[in-house]
Image (cartoon, rainbow, N blue to C red; front, side, top):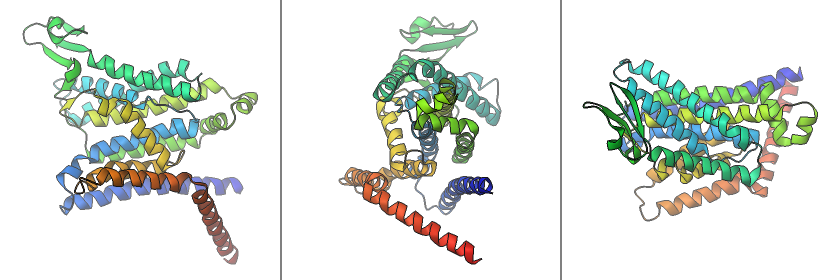
Length: 358
């Protein structure tokens, strides 16, 4: 009976999360149809979907696994460039946009997931600050490698260089696909807000099902007490690598959405650098570590807030900083935590009384 109650509670919580995402989608669509949303805000919708997926996927590593990773922008970069490269090469081969984009999603997620496994095997042996430093270094390495990479294609196949596009030695009529710091130009703009919301729901399903599965309980046991988890026979390396690689693959999916919304994809510090990794971590921390709904709300608020305050040019970053501080205090100050615990206890007591009366 208790097990059934727990299952129903989990199911209810998951349904609330899905319903929240669908409700936000419906509200946005109504605003678009009634011309109540500016074109600038509409342009932020697809990147916003990418940021939400990044936030909930990093929460799997930080909140559920309990490992501090600062390489999420690197996995996003891998997914973005591999999928954009695939789409650019397949434009003429696969003319159906939906099929091509679906395959690009698999390519981006698989490549980021493979990098997650390759990086995770040595890195997950580290803890705390050491893990954060190594994953941060990975993100910077990926960004810099992309910036020196030149790839072209002609009748002889693909040509690679790390000098410049002229050193590729392409035949007449050959195309440069990856042009070093100038990135990839002409990727099909297949991403839409609707596709982004569908991918958010799929990502939530993957993460929430993993959390509530046997593997998820093992991952949380490792987070809470590694020695105790190991003593009862839990394979530490296996489950840590599982969570880390799933998180990396979902970051790759976010990269696919991001890449297929741009005319030109470049690996700049502002989109795939250190600041991006920190921003994603801010979403997770402010939304509540381990709280998926909180991560979604934090990503939406902190992405849209600077644009909503654009009219207050002189004060918008000050207001943004104040909102960050207030959210941090509300989530993590002892008084706020005590108040939330009291409120939840009263609500549970009231609901129990109602159940007894019935």
